[in-house]
Amino acid sequence: MRSYQRWAACAAVVGLGIILTTGRADDDDKKIRDKVEELAGVAAKKPDDLQKKAEAWVKEAKPDLEDVMGLLKKRMKDGSGGFGIGKTATGKLDDGIEARIEKLAKAGPSDGDLMNKADLIQALNRTRAIAAIAKASGTNKAGAAAKWQDFVKRMAEGSDDLSKAIESGKAKEIKKAANNLHSSCVDCHAEFR
Image (tube, rainbow, N blue to C red; front, top):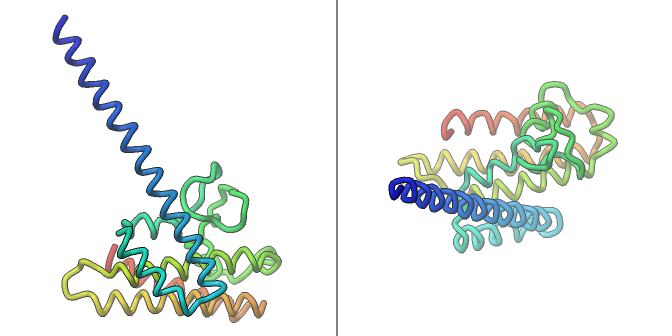
């Protein structure tokens, strides 16, 4: 009987640890999401202040860059996952910033994309904020700091260029800018993922 009680006590402690750890991870994810959203607002309104604010936050919070970059991934229908495009989670394959950039690079903008410019520009402000965080975070890969900074610069410039192209509404410019941004992602992932 005592072994059963010990086993039950151990199981309870492990279960409690999992619950507490999961709750803490959810809190961290929300803090990261909220900070990226705040920095996206800075990117939209005061872009010259963005890098300084991102550096201050990275120095203070020391976020896990993988969690930050994960916000570019697909948003699930229940709203979990990355930011997605627009206010409502669709669960569609392109309801993620990275997926939408890839779609724009391959096929150009749809009529829906051109009707929802504000949603795309908001997504790119988030991308720009994530690029600023990535620049401030740097890399731990030995001898790769210059390469990392080059990729981050391409991501930031690509986000800005795609925003301008979307504002113009010119499909050819959007596709070209999306291709440049998508290429920066693919090249970086080949080196650092």
